Image (cartoon, rainbow, N blue to C red; front, side, top):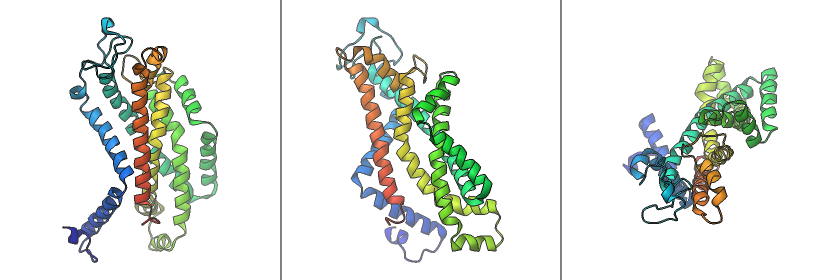
Length: 295
Protein backbone atom coordinates (compact mmCIF):
# COMPACT_ATOMS: atom_id res chain seq x y z
CA UNK A 1 0.00 0.00 0.00
CA UNK A 2 2.80 2.40 0.87
CA UNK A 3 4.58 1.79 -2.45
CA UNK A 4 1.27 2.26 -4.27
CA UNK A 5 0.63 5.57 -2.54
CA UNK A 6 4.19 6.82 -3.15
CA UNK A 7 4.44 5.68 -6.78
CA UNK A 8 6.43 8.06 -8.98
CA UNK A 9 3.90 7.71 -11.83
CA UNK A 10 0.36 7.42 -10.43
CA UNK A 11 -2.00 5.48 -12.65
CA UNK A 12 -5.04 7.63 -11.79
CA UNK A 13 -6.05 10.94 -10.28
CA UNK A 14 -7.36 9.08 -7.21
CA UNK A 15 -3.99 7.44 -6.61
CA UNK A 16 -2.22 10.80 -6.93
CA UNK A 17 -4.61 12.50 -4.51
CA UNK A 18 -4.35 9.70 -1.96
CA UNK A 19 -0.57 9.79 -2.22
CA UNK A 20 -0.57 13.54 -1.60
CA UNK A 21 -2.83 13.10 1.43
CA UNK A 22 -0.53 10.38 2.75
CA UNK A 23 2.49 12.67 2.48
CA UNK A 24 0.61 15.47 4.24
CA UNK A 25 -0.38 13.07 7.03
CA UNK A 26 3.22 11.97 7.51
CA UNK A 27 4.36 15.59 7.64
CA UNK A 28 1.64 16.39 10.17
CA UNK A 29 2.55 13.46 12.42
CA UNK A 30 6.17 14.63 12.53
CA UNK A 31 5.02 17.64 14.57
CA UNK A 32 4.32 16.55 18.18
CA UNK A 33 2.66 19.85 19.09
CA UNK A 34 0.30 19.61 16.14
CA UNK A 35 -0.67 16.08 17.21
CA UNK A 36 -1.34 17.34 20.75
CA UNK A 37 -3.52 20.12 19.33
CA UNK A 38 -5.43 17.60 17.23
CA UNK A 39 -5.98 15.42 20.31
CA UNK A 40 -7.37 18.41 22.23
CA UNK A 41 -9.76 19.29 19.40
CA UNK A 42 -10.84 15.65 19.09
CA UNK A 43 -11.43 15.57 22.86
CA UNK A 44 -13.69 18.62 22.47
CA UNK A 45 -15.62 16.83 19.72
CA UNK A 46 -15.98 13.69 21.83
CA UNK A 47 -17.13 15.66 24.88
CA UNK A 48 -19.78 17.41 22.81
CA UNK A 49 -20.93 14.21 21.12
CA UNK A 50 -21.07 12.05 24.24
CA UNK A 51 -22.02 14.69 26.82
CA UNK A 52 -25.06 12.75 28.16
CA UNK A 53 -22.82 9.76 28.91
CA UNK A 54 -19.77 11.67 30.19
CA UNK A 55 -21.73 13.91 32.55
CA UNK A 56 -22.02 12.35 36.00
CA UNK A 57 -24.87 14.62 37.14
CA UNK A 58 -27.71 16.62 35.66
CA UNK A 59 -25.98 19.90 34.67
CA UNK A 60 -29.15 21.92 35.35
CA UNK A 61 -30.30 20.28 38.57
CA UNK A 62 -30.04 22.69 41.50
CA UNK A 63 -29.26 21.44 45.01
CA UNK A 64 -28.78 24.35 47.38
CA UNK A 65 -27.82 21.98 50.20
CA UNK A 66 -24.72 21.05 48.16
CA UNK A 67 -23.71 24.50 46.98
CA UNK A 68 -20.01 25.42 46.66
CA UNK A 69 -18.72 21.96 47.49
CA UNK A 70 -15.02 21.44 46.66
CA UNK A 71 -13.87 18.81 44.15
CA UNK A 72 -14.51 15.30 45.45
CA UNK A 73 -15.24 11.75 44.30
CA UNK A 74 -18.93 12.58 43.92
CA UNK A 75 -18.42 15.97 42.25
CA UNK A 76 -15.13 15.82 40.34
CA UNK A 77 -14.91 19.58 39.78
CA UNK A 78 -17.04 20.63 42.75
CA UNK A 79 -20.37 22.46 42.64
CA UNK A 80 -21.36 26.05 41.94
CA UNK A 81 -23.40 28.54 43.94
CA UNK A 82 -26.63 26.72 43.04
CA UNK A 83 -25.32 23.26 43.81
CA UNK A 84 -24.94 22.25 40.15
CA UNK A 85 -22.17 19.84 39.22
CA UNK A 86 -19.37 21.79 37.50
CA UNK A 87 -17.91 18.76 35.68
CA UNK A 88 -21.26 18.10 34.01
CA UNK A 89 -21.71 21.76 33.14
CA UNK A 90 -18.21 21.96 31.62
CA UNK A 91 -18.96 18.89 29.52
CA UNK A 92 -22.27 20.32 28.29
CA UNK A 93 -20.61 23.70 27.79
CA UNK A 94 -18.35 22.06 25.19
CA UNK A 95 -21.47 21.64 23.04
CA UNK A 96 -22.13 25.36 23.11
CA UNK A 97 -18.49 26.14 22.31
CA UNK A 98 -18.43 23.67 19.43
CA UNK A 99 -21.71 25.02 18.06
CA UNK A 100 -20.35 28.56 17.98
CA UNK A 101 -17.07 27.42 16.39
CA UNK A 102 -18.77 25.40 13.64
CA UNK A 103 -21.37 28.05 12.80
CA UNK A 104 -18.86 30.91 12.73
CA UNK A 105 -16.47 28.88 10.54
CA UNK A 106 -19.32 27.94 8.20
CA UNK A 107 -20.21 31.62 7.76
CA UNK A 108 -16.94 33.53 7.72
CA UNK A 109 -14.90 31.04 5.67
CA UNK A 110 -17.08 30.97 2.53
CA UNK A 111 -18.11 34.63 2.90
CA UNK A 112 -14.59 35.99 3.26
CA UNK A 113 -13.25 33.67 0.56
CA UNK A 114 -15.95 34.69 -1.91
CA UNK A 115 -15.52 38.43 -1.31
CA UNK A 116 -11.73 38.20 -1.46
CA UNK A 117 -11.43 36.21 -4.70
CA UNK A 118 -14.07 38.32 -6.47
CA UNK A 119 -12.38 41.55 -5.43
CA UNK A 120 -8.94 40.30 -6.40
CA UNK A 121 -9.95 38.79 -9.75
CA UNK A 122 -12.37 41.46 -11.00
CA UNK A 123 -10.43 44.46 -9.65
CA UNK A 124 -11.42 48.00 -10.57
CA UNK A 125 -14.21 49.82 -8.77
CA UNK A 126 -15.64 46.59 -7.33
CA UNK A 127 -12.33 45.83 -5.65
CA UNK A 128 -12.13 49.33 -4.21
CA UNK A 129 -15.71 49.23 -2.85
CA UNK A 130 -15.34 45.79 -1.26
CA UNK A 131 -11.99 46.62 0.28
CA UNK A 132 -13.22 49.90 1.72
CA UNK A 133 -16.11 48.05 3.35
CA UNK A 134 -13.56 45.58 4.69
CA UNK A 135 -11.45 48.44 6.07
CA UNK A 136 -14.45 49.83 7.93
CA UNK A 137 -14.94 46.54 9.77
CA UNK A 138 -11.21 46.20 10.43
CA UNK A 139 -11.10 49.68 11.96
CA UNK A 140 -12.97 48.51 15.07
CA UNK A 141 -11.76 45.97 17.64
CA UNK A 142 -13.56 42.67 17.13
CA UNK A 143 -14.84 42.36 20.68
CA UNK A 144 -16.16 45.93 20.77
CA UNK A 145 -17.91 45.48 17.42
CA UNK A 146 -19.33 42.12 18.53
CA UNK A 147 -20.66 43.75 21.70
CA UNK A 148 -22.34 46.46 19.61
CA UNK A 149 -24.02 43.94 17.30
CA UNK A 150 -25.12 41.74 20.19
CA UNK A 151 -26.53 44.73 22.06
CA UNK A 152 -28.59 45.71 19.01
CA UNK A 153 -29.87 42.16 18.61
CA UNK A 154 -31.55 40.27 21.43
CA UNK A 155 -28.88 38.50 23.53
CA UNK A 156 -28.84 34.82 22.53
CA UNK A 157 -26.58 32.17 21.06
CA UNK A 158 -27.75 33.07 17.55
CA UNK A 159 -26.98 36.74 18.14
CA UNK A 160 -23.51 35.87 19.43
CA UNK A 161 -22.80 33.74 16.35
CA UNK A 162 -23.96 36.49 13.99
CA UNK A 163 -21.97 39.15 15.86
CA UNK A 164 -18.76 37.10 15.83
CA UNK A 165 -19.21 36.17 12.15
CA UNK A 166 -19.86 39.76 11.08
CA UNK A 167 -16.68 40.93 12.81
CA UNK A 168 -14.47 38.04 11.60
CA UNK A 169 -14.90 37.84 7.82
CA UNK A 170 -12.71 40.84 6.76
CA UNK A 171 -9.44 39.06 7.58
CA UNK A 172 -10.35 36.17 5.30
CA UNK A 173 -11.38 38.54 2.52
CA UNK A 174 -8.00 40.28 2.73
CA UNK A 175 -6.15 36.97 2.69
CA UNK A 176 -8.11 35.58 -0.27
CA UNK A 177 -7.72 38.82 -2.22
CA UNK A 178 -3.96 38.85 -1.73
CA UNK A 179 -3.60 35.29 -2.96
CA UNK A 180 -5.96 35.92 -5.89
CA UNK A 181 -3.85 38.89 -6.98
CA UNK A 182 -0.81 36.63 -6.87
CA UNK A 183 -2.43 33.92 -9.00
CA UNK A 184 -4.42 36.12 -11.38
CA UNK A 185 -1.49 36.96 -13.64
CA UNK A 186 0.14 33.54 -13.69
CA UNK A 187 0.63 31.64 -16.94
CA UNK A 188 -1.72 28.78 -16.14
CA UNK A 189 -4.63 31.12 -15.31
CA UNK A 190 -4.06 33.04 -18.54
CA UNK A 191 -3.92 29.74 -20.45
CA UNK A 192 -7.25 28.72 -18.95
CA UNK A 193 -8.78 32.06 -19.93
CA UNK A 194 -7.44 31.73 -23.49
CA UNK A 195 -9.13 28.35 -23.74
CA UNK A 196 -12.46 30.10 -23.25
CA UNK A 197 -13.12 29.45 -19.56
CA UNK A 198 -15.66 31.82 -18.04
CA UNK A 199 -14.71 34.03 -15.09
CA UNK A 200 -16.98 31.95 -12.84
CA UNK A 201 -15.20 28.75 -13.86
CA UNK A 202 -11.81 30.32 -13.27
CA UNK A 203 -12.83 31.54 -9.83
CA UNK A 204 -14.60 28.39 -8.65
CA UNK A 205 -12.55 25.72 -10.37
CA UNK A 206 -9.03 27.10 -10.21
CA UNK A 207 -8.47 30.09 -7.92
CA UNK A 208 -10.69 28.95 -5.03
CA UNK A 209 -8.84 25.63 -4.53
CA UNK A 210 -5.54 27.51 -4.47
CA UNK A 211 -6.76 29.88 -1.75
CA UNK A 212 -8.60 27.25 0.26
CA UNK A 213 -5.65 25.87 2.23
CA UNK A 214 -4.66 29.31 3.54
CA UNK A 215 -8.25 30.04 4.57
CA UNK A 216 -8.49 26.71 6.40
CA UNK A 217 -5.27 27.40 8.30
CA UNK A 218 -6.46 30.92 9.18
CA UNK A 219 -9.79 29.51 10.36
CA UNK A 220 -8.06 27.03 12.64
CA UNK A 221 -5.81 29.70 14.11
CA UNK A 222 -8.73 32.11 14.59
CA UNK A 223 -10.86 29.61 16.48
CA UNK A 224 -9.04 30.50 19.70
CA UNK A 225 -10.09 34.13 19.21
CA UNK A 226 -13.64 33.04 18.44
CA UNK A 227 -13.76 31.03 21.67
CA UNK A 228 -12.47 34.00 23.68
CA UNK A 229 -14.96 36.41 22.13
CA UNK A 230 -17.83 33.97 22.71
CA UNK A 231 -16.71 33.54 26.31
CA UNK A 232 -16.50 37.32 26.71
CA UNK A 233 -20.03 37.74 25.42
CA UNK A 234 -21.22 34.99 27.75
CA UNK A 235 -19.38 36.60 30.66
CA UNK A 236 -21.23 39.87 30.02
CA UNK A 237 -24.58 38.10 29.76
CA UNK A 238 -24.87 38.58 25.98
CA UNK A 239 -24.45 34.94 25.01
CA UNK A 240 -26.40 31.82 25.89
CA UNK A 241 -29.24 32.65 28.31
CA UNK A 242 -29.29 30.92 31.71
CA UNK A 243 -29.45 28.16 32.74
CA UNK A 244 -27.63 26.89 29.63
CA UNK A 245 -24.11 25.71 30.33
CA UNK A 246 -21.64 28.12 28.70
CA UNK A 247 -18.07 28.56 29.85
CA UNK A 248 -18.03 32.36 29.84
CA UNK A 249 -21.28 32.54 31.81
CA UNK A 250 -19.90 29.99 34.28
CA UNK A 251 -16.89 32.23 34.92
CA UNK A 252 -19.24 35.16 35.48
CA UNK A 253 -21.24 33.11 38.00
CA UNK A 254 -18.10 32.18 39.90
CA UNK A 255 -16.34 35.55 40.03
CA UNK A 256 -18.05 36.44 43.35
CA UNK A 257 -16.72 33.24 44.95
CA UNK A 258 -13.19 33.32 43.52
CA UNK A 259 -11.41 33.64 46.90
CA UNK A 260 -13.20 30.95 48.90
CA UNK A 261 -14.46 28.70 46.08
CA UNK A 262 -11.85 29.07 43.36
CA UNK A 263 -13.00 26.03 41.38
CA UNK A 264 -16.29 27.64 40.30
CA UNK A 265 -14.59 30.11 37.95
CA UNK A 266 -11.19 28.47 37.51
CA UNK A 267 -12.36 25.17 35.99
CA UNK A 268 -14.30 26.67 33.05
CA UNK A 269 -11.47 29.18 32.60
CA UNK A 270 -9.00 26.31 32.27
CA UNK A 271 -11.32 24.66 29.75
CA UNK A 272 -11.27 27.82 27.62
CA UNK A 273 -7.47 28.03 27.93
CA UNK A 274 -6.86 24.39 26.97
CA UNK A 275 -9.22 24.40 23.98
CA UNK A 276 -7.85 27.72 22.71
CA UNK A 277 -4.30 26.40 23.03
CA UNK A 278 -5.31 23.24 21.17
CA UNK A 279 -6.64 25.19 18.20
CA UNK A 280 -3.57 27.42 18.15
CA UNK A 281 -1.01 24.64 18.02
CA UNK A 282 -3.18 22.66 15.59
CA UNK A 283 -3.28 25.69 13.31
CA UNK A 284 0.50 26.07 13.53
CA UNK A 285 0.93 22.45 12.52
CA UNK A 286 -1.51 22.73 9.63
CA UNK A 287 0.25 25.89 8.43
CA UNK A 288 3.57 24.05 8.32
CA UNK A 289 2.03 21.09 6.48
CA UNK A 290 -0.06 23.02 3.95
CA UNK A 291 2.53 25.69 3.16
CA UNK A 292 3.88 24.79 -0.31
CA UNK A 293 7.11 26.70 0.37
CA UNK A 294 7.78 24.48 3.40
CA UNK A 295 7.32 21.38 1.24
